[in-house]
Image 1 (cartoon, rainbow, N blue to C red):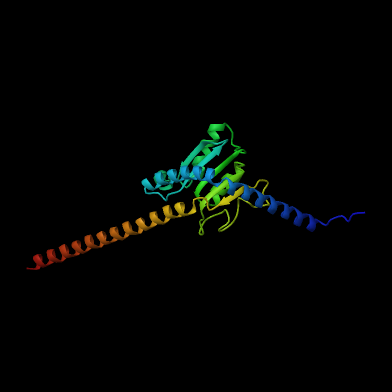
Image 2 (image 1 turned 180 degrees about the vertical axis):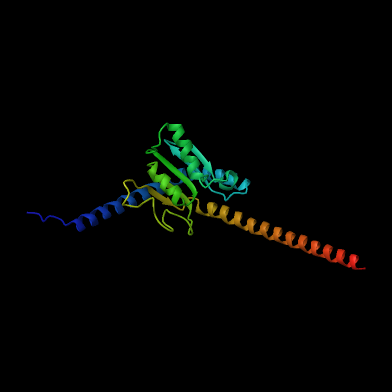
Length: 211
């Protein structure tokens, strides 16, 4: 007669099963990397649209049966909206394309690890597969700060593939912030020069008055 497993043993078995499924899935996606990179390049194109607006360059596409059904890029400052993230825009467009809030047979490609809001939206949309370019150590919720996408307590988890076109996506971010620091530095210098000219003009004005 076989021994009845304890609840703890059942949990360990379930966790091991999930880990095995995750490893198998990652291996399968690695074998199809070139195809996935094609879609990530489309997400990079979206990120460059954000950069052209002076936004942090983040882009996203959603794919269903080999066809892109949703695109989005970061417009938070442009639209003055906390919700104007690349993933949210892509999810909205994909949902309109399929006529449903559930995106259960889709894959999402995003250049930067999703934040807590976007990771939550991905779970709510039931998106089963997420491909990430580079990670976001300060705000990422797909493994950096927290891992919402693979949280076993939720009734839905996503498979996550990290590091797809990582170098290209990372360089987009680094280049943007480098340019931003240079612009900010130049603006600060110009402001300092303007302030010095004003002070000089005030001083000269007082001297003329006194004379």
